[in-house]
Image 1 (spheres, chains in turn brown, red):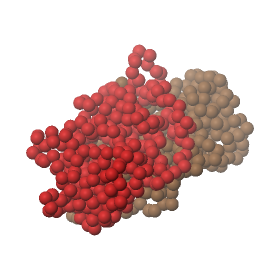
Image 2 (cartoon, helix red, strand yellow):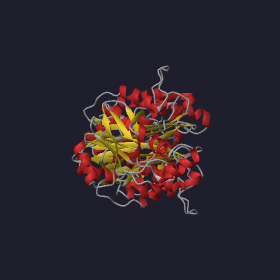
Image 3 (tube, chains in turn red, orange):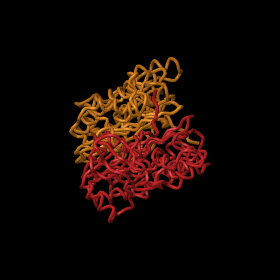
Image 4 (spheres, chains in turn green, red):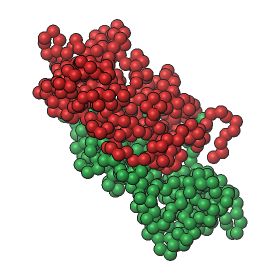
Length: 310
Length: 310
């Protein structure tokens, strides 16, 4: 395996690994970085949080339209959003990739991964580089560490809890799904300020992800239609789709905001003074998932993106 | 997302997740298992070892020939082999998958992953389930914990060291690449018995992987042609390819045995009494990678499988 000297771009996995090792700075948390059989990290002192997310060209983005850098950025950011959902601190990431042979852009993918990781000082400590004749696949695994208050689960919401979201929802497909900022800092700030009973990031869609919380917690919820923050993208999209902006806010996926439940007292404290922008959208009840508008409750179907296997 | 009651097989990612959660036993190391935004683990007390490996249908196996169960088994075992290469203890795994829509076999893939993981008491703590119209992709990340002697790196071999391998090599494509046992136990037993200076698992091929050790260690090696253990598969394959069995043993990938360097004193101890079967194949010298046969040294090209990007 001789390095090609006639090209500025790495053309084999080993040249690529050498290239990215040269761009990986030393980090006191990293005992062994890219280039060995495994990475080795200083062990965390608090519970270890792990998430993995695979993104595919043609499903999660269209590389020919968005470019490799934004594809890489999204792959890392989507994983960091899952770390945020537990209100944990991200500490390291590994990435496995299947490149489309000959398509190029390996460096751009790495730079995009680093764009998102660097924003949270997360070292990229290892990975696996492959190529094939099929579309690009990127799988990221991020490790994190729970705070001293512990990881926040989907389970833990109780009737009487208030429900909040961290930002406007809907219409992510128009661009937000590529350039969102994972709510890592917001989650940590909220977790320090109040007792988060349950939390989830909004990747499948508000109704679907809230449904995840309710299923795990064994309770129900009412969402107030007027309270749901609707993004301007949801309004833009609404003009094309014929669906209402609210429907987009409730059903579209990939907002990568957080939906969480807190006790009523913590809830009113957040309304008075929250460390980050939050919007109260409803409250937990005994059972069911309901949308309340004009004083009337209707069932809110937990629709969202679902990967069909069969 | 209603569970389909008319089918014995999960047809959506949520049914699949519910199915595999029901098959995931409690584990004292696992604080939160599959089904939340992240898994949460009891933190290891010693350095944390991380590896990731992505396998693709048509590249690493042909699903239509080998079936989903063996595909899953290989994906997990290949990752465990990297943990073995550091002489670490595997502690947990996460898996992200892109299934080929409609192809079925999701349960079999999980059972195959578990076949390999269960053999080392490794819990499968989380993952990401996707589907698309392209071939199956499985990406596994395994976490491990270094022993008190530390993780064994590729770097650390020195001139005068003796080189060993843990088993016969070559011809893996005839079947071994699907049913190998990752050398986790062997690595731990060797690490407890002697001071392993450097180690690598043989995934690219003996010459290529030994070359990795030499590059990282900054030394050379001589391999004795007669000493290289040649598998019966290498001999079988030789009859079809016209290459010699030795060439297959030196160049074929996916043996998933270990190649390692120890000091001469530890080396002779292993020859007298090793905790596991090992074969001395040569020794480290100042520079170069050489094959010695009939008293003559020829350069040994570090050829092996390389993913081309350009």
